Image 1: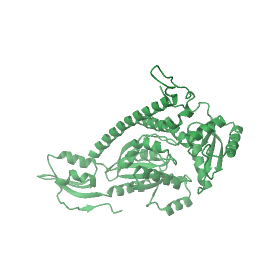
Image 2: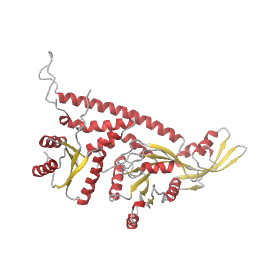
Image 3: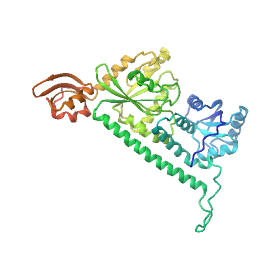
Image 4: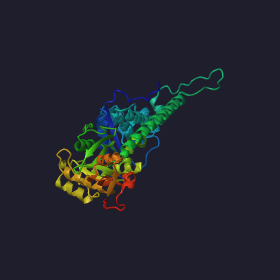
Length: 435
């Protein structure tokens, strides 16, 4: 059975390398390397040293110049490292050249992220998505992963020439697995669409919680809905979306979905593989963008999240911006956040509960956008529609009459089509949604 080679088990100590290019600041590269250090420690590899390299233009063979490569190798050997990790993406050829020259395991940021996702995957869907991403990443790197690629299957009686090279066999096997994984994920996507359509039959408003990894998405879901989503102080603690029901003080119901976290330079093939999960954000009525206010790079992290949302086609969604962990920030930092003024952001601490009441009130106001308050007269044989209105928590007043039940409701615009035949007044009594 074909398998992609894992990193050697003896890899324990890593040397990190980040390239400082033109138009990039030293602070940006330093913060990116610090994040790479966190990612590396998440896969149980100790970071023993790092180097920031000024790079005018990358070398096709080694990414860095040979002189700088020799300098890094000496430092890595002096620190007794057995792995070099680049913060920048390396081509398959550059990885092979580095490993041949150094004898070390040489990987890049993308491979570290893939390894983390592989360790965190729990459900069948997450495993499929990670496998697809890893296969797509590994296909052009097969020469690096195998030692038997020089062997060829000899020609038979009816064959001429040397036959099919082992590298071609392996590539064909990988492509077959990629095709099979895509088919299985298409089935998962179809099943998720069916589940989503069932939710939409009772058209409760939905919101997806998005944000940088470790910003507090699962913690927010647990706080609001008393859910039991995994919460750990580590990157990518959860990969699978979790949807829970939130009953607001007004009695209305909001479905909240926790999504996978984002990170800078998230591999494109990983975003593609996780589209089945990330589609929850696309289907939501609005997004809750949560930001870790205690992180020095919170503005850059927010920009990264918005960029990924743009790649997914969700940039036009209504967004509530929320700064979390505000209890860990100074008064000056809080002032800086308010100067940014991200569409009237909310400031909360899930840990202490500060700002949560105001945030919940803001969720109520967000639900008002695009909703209509109308009067309906439902006949006695349509108690199924009455039940749906109560499930949505949108009934303000209800009176029994001879012809049926008169209800005054605030109803989402997308649910109106099922109730139009029972409108008492065709005109809108009150339209909410003034931004």
